[in-house]
Image (tube, rainbow, N blue to C red; front, side):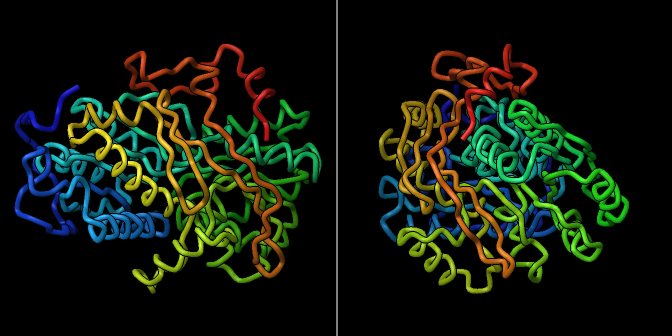
Length: 426
């Protein structure tokens, strides 16, 4: 795996440069321990369909970098960032990732929201052996040499959520999920956890990301009369489902790993639209701890017009803390050496609690909290526990300290996924 001190191949494709935001802390670029600065590339949706998620993530990265610089930087060097806006567009992600990696020669790359945008940039990340932090919850399964996944994954989300929903409301579930890899693979996990816990999926559908009218879907759900509805709806268009469901009288408990903590519908919509939504979360603004309140205060002091600090707005902040620790322990920005330090495992004091990076799989443990929306849209936390990221290691055998891999695995790749599911519930 190459060091950033080696010049990368000639940048042969001109990437769109509109919307670039750079915090200049010196004239030198990234890519060398001789540079005056350390350069971070940030790819977050500051506009477009996913900006309700991407903009708080971008702001969290900036807050972390500013705080790091105020405390003396990393290895005594200022951190600068280059943050072009992908505008929720897959092609722009490809172009801008090439620009950040091949032209700007960033020491570390972070960002991307939707899984299809992560997959759009990962070929370049893999080819150039770029240290990359994917700061999102996602559908899981990524065993990748240079990618570190900071958010929660299905065994942490649905192993917490689905057994509770079946015990509390009954065994029949209906799934509505976005029609792309994240929604489809998440539905596979939901279905597996439902069936392994004695339940049954009585209906499912996968609307495209562009869909914003849900009258027919709501009618089908009402006809199926499930005990609970599992939703994996993402972006501004699909969030329209919830107001339409309220208007059409859909009255069924809901469960989601994304709606609520990710898209903060309980803040954006009037009560009681989201009453009865349950979510397994690793972060919400409402977590009642002094450490979290301190983070919330600092965030709003920096970004007073921010609407809500969503779950994945914490992940970029944690990402920068991990990166700082790893670089300082390595004593260099050499990407291979930083990765080697990260693969030894690392603890971090996150706003959500004390977390650990599992070096073998490049995934994080999380303090998963089971949250419920009340009639007035306040949040109740029902239970919590530290949940390890176990699927890749236990069911697939992923160990990136021993083997090289860039594969995204799914439940189908596990020899005995039902045994794994049965042994990994909250």
